[in-house]
Image 1 (tube, one colour):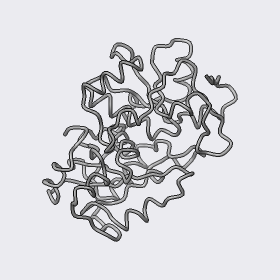
Image 2 (image 1 turned 30 degrees about the horizontal axis):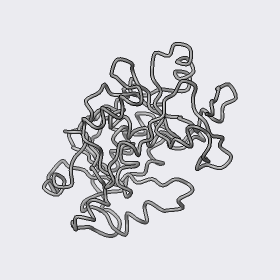
Image 3 (image 1 turned 45 degrees about the horizontal axis):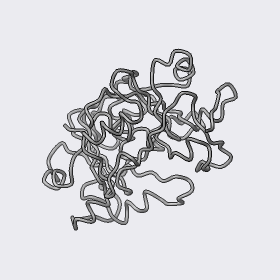
Length: 279
């Protein structure tokens, strides 16, 4: 299964046994939107809502950190996902948080997953069918989760990398947030970035219609940010959501798949022992 699927592909595959569709929408605190309420107003036929906050470690104050394999397995089984299913994620913005769902599936060993290119806005703009209301409950699935830790980085890994510089940290936030000249969406959060990190706003991988740029354009943009394929990459952002867009973009571009720093700037900025840079 390719990491990106088109609206044409999904429309042709609707109703196929073993295809699961999830709306993995998430809104920043400043947006004051209810993703589940929007889902109930309109969603792709057969889709269910995938709550990124529920698919998270509940033992930390950090937002939607990756859960244990056991928690993720129980959630996916409750949603009716089976180990042999193909899973497609989309979101209500176009391509914003759906990539986080895709990355979680890969983190826990399920490679038959993809992101809908352009998401709900493209589907809607093309006049395709929509449903309303809550999703029909599915019978329990037999999904099995197995953590692939090579796709994940913690704060200890990133601190150690300050000395070794073995991996390139690529920050998906806006240039203003990276430089510390624009406010963070969470209150009382300082701006800036991890020393040595490079800036590549996730929005720069997307066209005006919120579809991902073609592979050759992605490779050019990654190269401008210092990604050549020779040095491993760790993606970061505010809370590990848009970092997954960079990870997805690298896979689509044919570059080696990056790891993702899950705590991202929200964790780094709050820790006394972590150096911060503004520029």
